[in-house]
Image 1 (tube, rainbow over the protein chains, first blue to last red):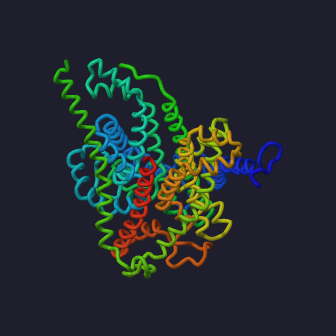
Image 2 (tube, rainbow over the protein chains, first blue to last red):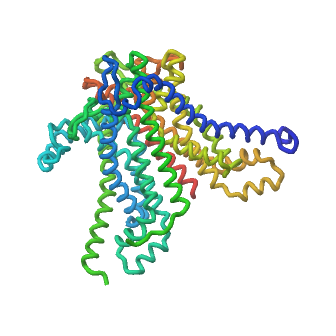
Image 3 (cartoon, rainbow over the protein chains, first blue to last red):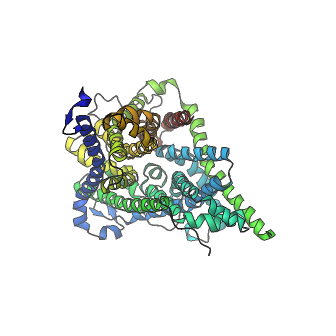
Length: 315
Length: 278
């Protein structure tokens, strides 16, 4: 029988399964290294030509062969920050609602619906953004913001609907499930005894959340928000479709901009010479480096919480 | 005693949390509602059986894109499922705690967060450029790479749920380890693993960015996997940003079909999972 074939004391089947599965596990590390090396090599020409100035140069002119990433970094950062603020607040709110307030049935339903939000493809969000969200922003929300908060530079100028605000809002919707799901998980790990202790001391439910739950879950929630940020930075299609795609650095959220992922998506197949392509890959490399670091850090945070942190403390 | 200030503050905060739950559901209904409403109005039989018409011409369909997406997802699964599944077997059955498996787990997590467009660039430089043309293969590999970490994570979770006693019982009977894994551990957690794979499939079937540099798109049927191939997400994208009214209509129809596929995969998964727990 095949299963009895033995080499020394170990069966052949074991050797085969053990080493093929080992190879596959190793291939994950291999793929990661391959991504890094390939990106670095294809960006080489641009890196040697422009040096660190690539990041601070705001000119992007394929005709004159001058490339700088600043406008794209700006667009990505601003839209991601908008998303982070909105999704961070609402996501943590949802997580608290699900853990501390909702009845079991509502909890299951709402968690499922929020998860479904993550399942909708990015391109569908983009389509919705172009035809539903953008007109809504242009005709109603942005004029209203301009009227009441127009004294702030970020709400000045002509509402266009296809701008940084639209990009930020779409991103907020897309990263909300990430923030909500991870916050919900870490909040659920807070021991019941800790909650009961706060309540026994006469705390209201909110006070219990503030002194017993949030400090305990703090770093895990931060990890969730960072994972959401990582997703926002690299998100391509939806942003490309609504951000306006104009390389500009303007303070107003009503002005069109360009993000790192969008410029790659739009110009990659049209890059006519090597240096152009290389510059686009360097933008990708910066994006890769940032998301890599963010994810690594976020995972460490979430892991440390899962392992059981120190208890909360009163301020 | 709770004084009224603290009580009101408490009520207010509870209201804020409930409100954020309600706010988080609005986009879901807004997006799904419009996709269903606009999509149903634009879907017709032609959409499923015809090729796209010429530039800006009304009529035609996305038959090639629908089939293209199915082909790409199949190719991706061919790459992503075996690698992901076996890697998870190693991490759970053979090596749970060495530095190697910790590093692999960590890499898996980080790989999940790598933007899909980066995978597109890498596959473009490593496969499309040497082959000198865009192809379904390249796209399948790109999507497969995106699938791997999702499959690893899901399979790992499920294998871990199988009690140790089951494995020990097998060993006590003198069954070799690989036989225990294949005939006892994997079948026990099969439903959960399939669930995870379906979720991974759902995730990649909507991916657009990496396809732009690998599959490119095609207005006709691809004659082989060595040619550029059409796919629903790319078709939706190029129609949505086009200036033609009829193409916008078809983009909505495409979005409805795509969302239908993804949501069915998710709901189906949910259903299987519930069965499993009974």
